[in-house]
Image (cartoon, rainbow, N blue to C red; front, side, top):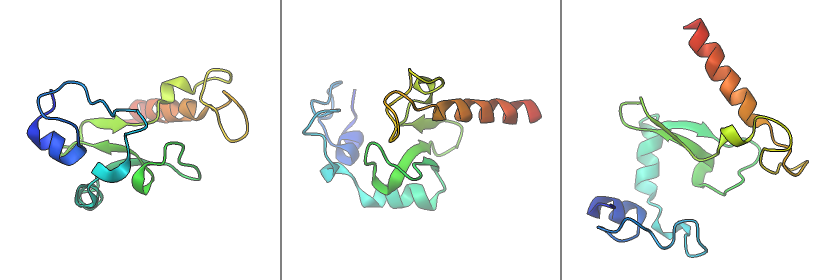
Length: 115
């Protein structure tokens, strides 16, 4: 359920589990709060940004953020869908050709192994 605080920041209706505008044409940027984005930036909680191409038009090219403790990451792109040609998202150069997710996962594995 959406709390009153979440509804104030993100829009929608408190007490409802479903936001009728989620991923719909009525979902727009009018409920984005620059103050919240400024806080995320100031606290170093922007974990990932789109570089070169922002496929969903997120503000400030933000692709992922962390919680306040930094131990949970929310990520908008779905790298698990982009690990082999033919299954990834459309790229500028090819339909279903994106394999950027593979580099994401291999970098995570390399860092865990070397830790």
